[in-house]
Image 1: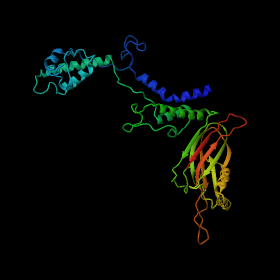
Image 2: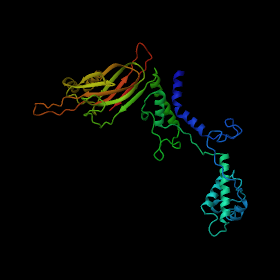
Image 3: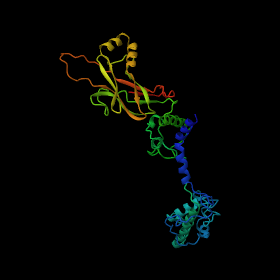
Image 4: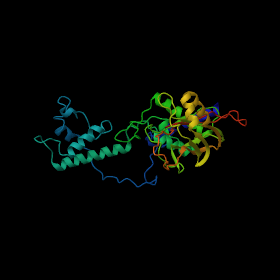
Length: 384
């Protein structure tokens, strides 16, 4: 579809459009170009403070270089790897970098070196002052900001741009690889390289993001929400209703209004046996803090069925933990948890220790609807 291609192109080029604008803004104008005109704009005309012009200084004397410098820095000796033979300090356009080094050496008192003939300090000061003035004048005529690498958005900046432009909050860490770092920073152009593999991942992320932003009817989006498997599900999870234990709470953006199939998958052990079915437990699914689904899990009947045929019993429980609820488009807080059982002690002198069922994954699917047969099929899996 042309519209889909346009959406992908819009989101996929977010990382490069800002780069081009930044590069154009930092690129020095070419002399005599149409953007600058044939005459240079003075700072006063541009509303900027005028540059303080240095007092007139005579051009650096080439005879001083020939007398005190070329003796060592000639084409034959090349002391220090430098030859000043045939070079004119008054013409720094072709070798400005060399004369900058010469000025630094003279200012530091290192040249001419000790034991070699030196001019009077006043003469040497006048020469280096005129050389520096000539270098500054040349730099103003031909500014050189240096090399500017291609600067793309890093992963965090890309997510912020998507949020600001499309009002879609996405976890870019699930969609894009981490950026390289240099001295602790991951937003430097020198480390933000672009490879074919990285472009493929940005295009894949653009497909998912555009599907969420526009509510496409054809794309399939699969997102995984995981928590470490060694986290305990015996305690209350912050943000979930009081009187509950374990589970997870996450924010998910639903692409469009519709009825969504929700499902929960409970933990099995290494042989596929569903644990924690000795006693009855109540599972709850909530959206934005409002309960939308509850189901009973466990108890004598489920425990006996699991002991008789654990695979068939697990399939029956999986079907029981499915529901369909209407949800509006946009971000919503989805919670999946168990109601906390009573901690009151039993009158029995001995109490058996029993495990509790634990949430393994949560998924949701948007079914086809009679009002919109093109309704997307989207699945979100939350492993924990």
